Every structure is written in structure tokens, then in C-alpha cells.
Image (cartoon, rainbow, N blue to C red; front, side):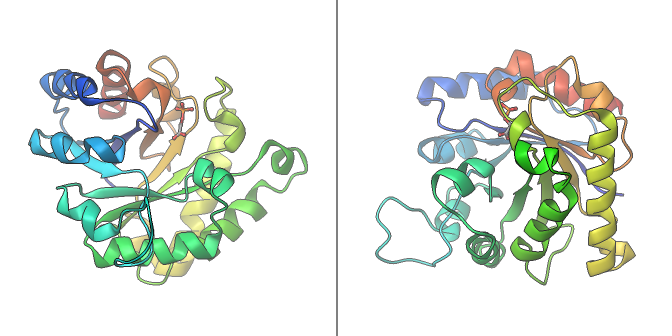
Length: 247
Ligand code: PGA
């Protein structure tokens, strides 16, 4: 069985005072059987990890290279050095705003694994892809291109995030979520065999809120969520964690 994971992506939100939300969240948690991960901006990784609570910490990106002349970037080893255990890779906002290709993401996956991090690999189609009936082709190609050989349930989590559902309040139908998650599960089993393929956590992301989480988590191959806006406040995120624990 895959682990249940509730991951929050703070994106470019939060200065030091936002760590109070982390403390509030830690006070409400842990919820049995759920791994809770918060991915704050890079500036907050060290103080967030130093809180030493049951909440795991993750970065939102890392560079593929070990070190060197890459102004403004941080390496996977630097992320691990903060005390973080996870890194989000291939988020659609990075693929879009920073031109990251599947090959770029693939290289970052290698770097993350080499540093001992668990990568949360994001995949998802645009609205135009969905309207054209290309969703599974697009997501399948992203998976094939971004996920290197060597994925295990310990080093990899997948997050299906339809681009048109991110930050929009639009959520796919349950059937659309199930279709993609079942497809991803089958692809993983095909590539990695039943044991590993069935044990990698598949998260859904895109406008997950406290009031829709329970329904989303009913799907067999939805093992958690990657949450943006509703992860910023403990009061909004805690009900999502509770819904996952109850699923
Ligand atoms: P959202 O973002 O929950 O604000 O839609 C999700 C994400 O980008 O991971």
C-alpha cells in the first residue's frame, strides 16, 4: 500500500512570521497514518526544518548540478542540508515560467535522489490538451520523459496536477481524476513491476480544499494531495489532512 501524503506547496508566499502557521499545524497534528509535508520558499527551509516537528519539510525545486556557477539556484545537496526530506520537481509553474522540459526534470530527479531526497514529481495537462482529448498522451509522455530509471516508493511521489485546475477553483470530475490516476498506476506497474509500482504514492493537486478533499480521496489510486492555496493557513490545511486520515 502506498503511504498517504498531504503536501502543501507555499509557492512564493511567506516570510518568517508564516512559521507560526507551521507551529499551529504541528499542534493539531499528527494524524495517524498520514505523512504531512510543507514546502515553504527556500528562504524558510532552514527555520522550518529546525522546528523539528512531525511535519516533514520540502523544497519547491532544485538544480540538476551538484554545484557551480548557477546564480540564484540551489542544489539538491543544499536542500538536504537544510533538513528537508522532499523536493517538488516539474511543477507546471516551473515548466511554464522557467521553460523546464521533461529532460530537465529528469536530470533534477537524479540530483534529488543522489542527495537522499524524495522527489514529488508533478505532471498535468493544459486545458487545450484536455479539450483535444490528449490528457493521457500528455501525462504519459511527461511520465516517460521525467521519471528516470530507479524510481522506488521511498524516493518518488507522483502528483497529477491538471494545469487548468491550479489556483482556479475548477476541479476535475471524480471520473476524470480516477481515469488519470488509474492510468498512472498502470504505467508505474508496467515500468517498475507490481510491488514498487503499486506502492508509489499518487497525489492529486489543483484547487483541493477542505470541502472537496474527502470526495477526491475516495478514489482508490488517490493517495493524497498536493495543495497550494489551502496549505498556507493551518486552519485550511488541517481539514484536508483529516479527510485523508479518514479515507
Ligand atoms: P492550488 O495549487 O491548490 O492553489 O490549486 C496546487 C499546486 O499548484 O500544487
